Length: 318
Length: 310
Image 1 (tube, each protein chain N blue to C red):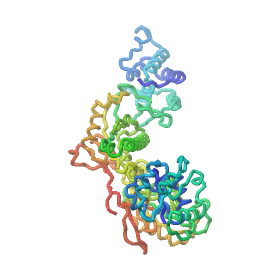
Image 2 (cartoon, rainbow over the protein chains, first blue to last red):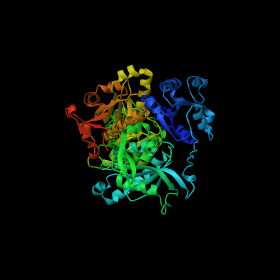
Image 3 (cartoon, rainbow over the protein chains, first blue to last red):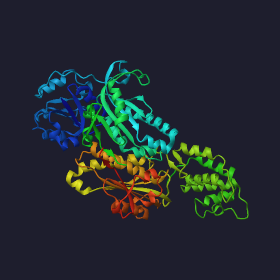
Image 4 (cartoon, rainbow over the protein chains, first blue to last red):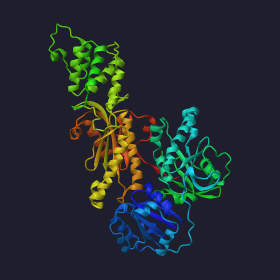
């Protein structure tokens, strides 16, 4: 079961946190820009519960809701986190199945509430296993298994760089890049976990906490020339490579990961070091649902690797 | 003239620097580089046959440069004298470091690339960087941005929606320009003009233009609410310009005309064009990002985002 949250700003941290905490217990919850939703509303709403953030305006909510009123197996609700609507019943008269007011938004859904909404809206729901909310890296239990999204991130064309800037500067560049990834990953709720000689394995929560990490990686690829020149002071071209995978791992703090044996960790490393290439994002199909709607058209199937289907983004031309 | 507020303590400090470092004649000579035809004796009424004390000269000169709004310009000239000397002779300006520190405390930063003071952007951001005087001629780099098919956007989506998109564009532009010590001089109608003076100004303006192209690419995919891409043409040119607080006055000057021409005639949508005057000053790693485009008649180089297959 997919829940879409249609909002003006898909990087809205509060909305994103609410979606992952309250709306993902029966499947996935994803933020989508109202402009992107509007373009193919009927297709996108198929089989989904759609929440419209009232931040886009009541008129716009009703306009988008009218676009999906004839879509089968689809229902919608409203998130009014500021308690702005003087008469929420207007949404129900227009066919809404739920209204999330200011207090409920702050408190989050109690277990079972989403199922009640789906039931009310006429969805056939099986018992949903409540997905555990991500407690944050500091609160994860040591040695316990945790669901995560892996991202292997590295400087691209390191052979070429070795020839052009030398071993010493390449080593410094790798250090700088790893330091750069710390705040970068934090923006997406992530953490730089393990470093190897060429790159870093970054962990992200299983659902978005802040900016979507694939969108963040896409932005780095887009800005690679500026980052290389302005931040790393390079006089030669710079590019990156990214490989994403979703799976589980035993949790240990960075620096204490030496003895971890995990199929998913191995796969993420292999994907990043053996399969990924420069200037684009490679991802295992498990991550596909994490690809934000606004970038979905840039990804396509990219064969198999170690028994898993892959998808890859288009490559930025230099 | 710009009104750089100069506290009395700062004036006194400058007077002390002058008295301790230069005799009256050299003080006058240095002032002439800032105020043309400056005649110390005419201003003080001192007869030519009576030698003037350094203290008297310094007092008059500092009062005059402060009144003319040229305090920072004069200190910059002194810094150059300290660094390069004059006519083969070196001059050490006593207390210059302390003077710089006090000017810094007043909200000005020293730009080593241009040897000019500029206002500290953390404190304020004004179109003249808090120091340019009317008619002051310097080498600027200009970034011109124009929205493609502006009228059709308004017609199709309504004025409110289009204005919302333009506001977003202005915010993006302010972010990419001011981050690189540039200033937005005008955002009239469907276009905008930003200027760069400090640091390596041509490079800064090109980086801002590239960042704008990138930001709009993401904006159109993620945040754009009008339902169709907001497309712009951006162009960069560099050249001499006499600063005027009225942008309309500056637009008539050749450097402004060239950047307007580069944007309107040679720039495809969603791209940044740079003139050869700019390209020639860029480091190769940036210069190589730009391609010659036949449609520009080889008068400009063009940068745009290229997405190929995997």
